Image 1: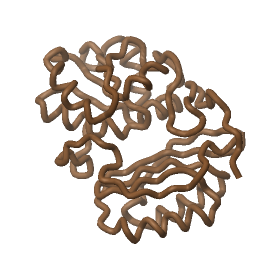
Image 2: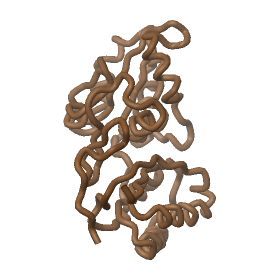
Image 3: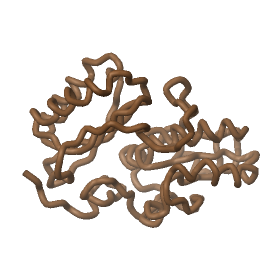
Image 4: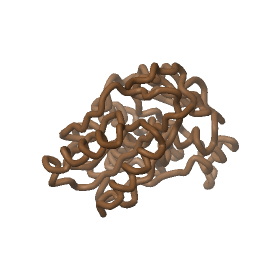
Length: 249
């Protein structure tokens, strides 16, 4: 497999989106990359595919901007480019929750690493001896494709429904260690901050999401595949495409 796929995001204030957009588009086009980059007042969200040298060239260029210097990517490989176009889009939010004052840039929620989470799940308890509850913050069709064993979800069809759903169930989790997870971590950045606002304690986000867990812990305690939003459809715990796309030129 010769095509490198990356995903990453960062919550950082962007007040120059109108001028940043064409510069990012031009750089991606010059390198022959395909994918989607979202720019919002709250930050950037990146999904790109192409030759490894081109991807690394783009990241080198992006890192020259101090706002993005510390961006770290999640990587996987495929035999073809799973995007048809290169689009840089302006959005109101890079992940839509519709709770305007939840701003991960100023205060990031507490995380748990993939290795630590695997250890907790192996034992069935966190380091303080609390029962582990896994909460899937993704939409129902994603959950149906695969999730952590015994994870809970609320059958939501879009992430903006999550605040109401978790508020209705928050009292169930008192005294337990709650770990939220999503594809790449971006939804949980907002979800856990909202849960903290509700007064929930011992709540964590899986750092880097499912894809980083696959990369560092494999398929332990997981069943099925993980939906991704490109033509690969889903990835297995070895980060292999469930369906190989035809290469686009």
